[in-house]
Image 1 (cartoon, one colour):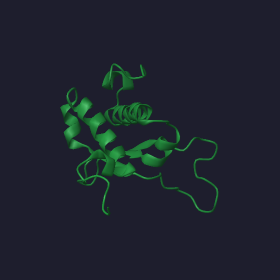
Image 2 (cartoon, one colour; image 1 turned 90 degrees about the vertical axis):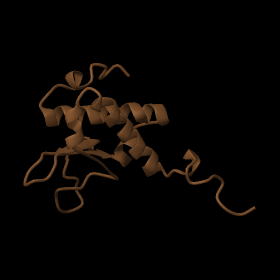
Image 3 (spheres, one colour; image 1 turned 180 degrees about the vertical axis):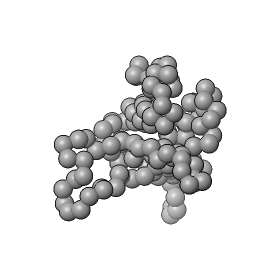
Image 4 (cartoon, helix red, strand yellow; image 1 turned 60 degrees about the horizontal axis):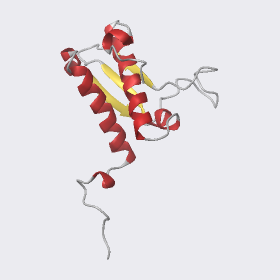
Length: 128
C-alpha cells in the first residue's frame, strides 16, 4: 500500500516545526487569559538565532546560545517575541520537557517586554 501513513490532520503527519509552533501557541494562549494585551504582540518561531558578527566566531562569546528574544514595537510595527526552535529542542528530551521549556522561554520574553518579573507574568514560573 502506497501513500501517507496517516491523513494530514492527524498529529502523526505534523512536522517537528509544526509541533513546536503548537507548543508556543499553547503557551501564549495560557498567558493570554491573564494578560489580554498579548493579543497585540506577534509570537514567532525561528530555527536558530542570527549571529550579529562577522567571521566564524559566535557573537555570543562565552554566553549560551539564546533560546528566545524580544523585538520592541517601533515604527508602526508590533512588538515581537521570538522562540528559537533548535536551541530549545537540543536542551530537551521528550514532549513534556520541551513544552515546559517553551513556556518558560515565552514567559521570560513576555516579562522582559512588559517590564515585569517572570513570576508576575506566570505565578507558576519555575515550578516545573
